[in-house]
Length: 492
Length: 112
Image 1 (spheres, each protein chain N blue to C red):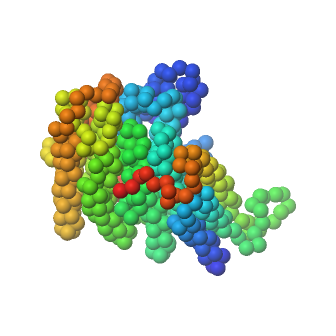
Image 2 (image 1 turned 30 degrees about the vertical axis):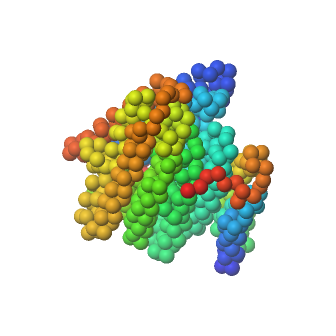
Image 3 (image 1 turned 135 degrees about the vertical axis):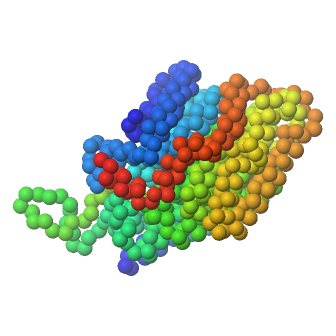
């Protein structure tokens, strides 16, 4: 169960797919499946073995101040499970979906590189290594966004690439400043060294990282690239990008840097609160006006990431628990909704809500699972979205920030309006659509059913007893700010 | 201090070009300039005045050395930037084939 296997397995399968996949069509999906299932099982095992502990692996046997360490802590393991789960369902969905886009071994190879690089971001303990994995993941994402080969896909990919190059330059600047202040790149040592550095330097570092990784997380002033990129990609990739990529490259890294390295300075927590609330409101207001289903979902991703940021900015155990729970839930229901959009695109040949109709009869599984996803994202009990939003709002009230809680409730109501629109005008409209252009494959339907069931099942994570077992170790890993450094440097 | 400010100015020139230019090629060049500024910044942080190359030899006295780690980092980041630039150029070629123009204000199918 060593940490490197999370990176090696997907990357090795990507390499093998390029070797053997072009000869026979079956090899690509088969190898990708095998690797993802292996990573999924490994991540589950690691999470439950870890408990509240931490696992450090020194690459090449170089001791820590000199070498690069791979670190798996409860937060990383929790994220690894989400990434593996969503990649698994996305692969299941891809098998029949990607057929209509042409030769597919390239797709599976890029997909596995994306998974491997995201796992790399999650397990690395070195700041520059984190940057390198970020770049690998984003490179694979450019390729996958442009995969369909139509004009607007290249346009979206170009925009995405330009934005990504700005954010990588900012991150590189931030790393340069960190290195000049601390003379080390291991995150744990940086955390120790920064405790003796003045607050001015911390603000410089934090501001550069917030701009760099905020661009990747598509927080509100930096969001412009997301609706294009996420709506132009093939549906399973949209769900990977919206479901996990903006969370691993954005939210996870922000939590790691601002909590475990910088020790959660108040000025940045306030910034998180303000930007989070701004994202919640503006994201959903932009989403309401959309008629293109995938674009609507992409804008609503911005708003939902706002909830996660709001919970993180509260800096209370309850707020962080809500944020992490919402992170898991958003990955599930947003992926489900993107699968629905993909199925509708294949079945009806359109993404425009006004042209859809008769879906409950033609595509019953899509109609019912999209209802589950819409209820979950709007926060209707007993679906998971209700509980995570409730926890975040209660945490905001307890932290004596009722104004933010009120705005979060308003955002939730607007989300409800958005998805009522999807159901009323799209899925359950009375447009006379007589027959399907193509039937969705079994893989697409299975992926949707799995996620719809999980949307209800994950509600149980909030029940006392299960919460202590699953969510609390992760929250403890985030809230124990200096514990990360102590565990990594002392836990050998 | 002035040299860091100049380096930051270079970064801002890149950002300015990225935001204001309408030509795809010029946007790619501007993103390159931003990357150079970031790389230069890293190398500058590793520089020591009148330092020597960081290799210990027999008979050589230990003196002030330049920091070798930033140079290693810059090599990696140059390679990454090469990748980004190649990707951007490839996308530009595809865009030119589809739209027959390099003008970004005419390549606008995605809005809203």
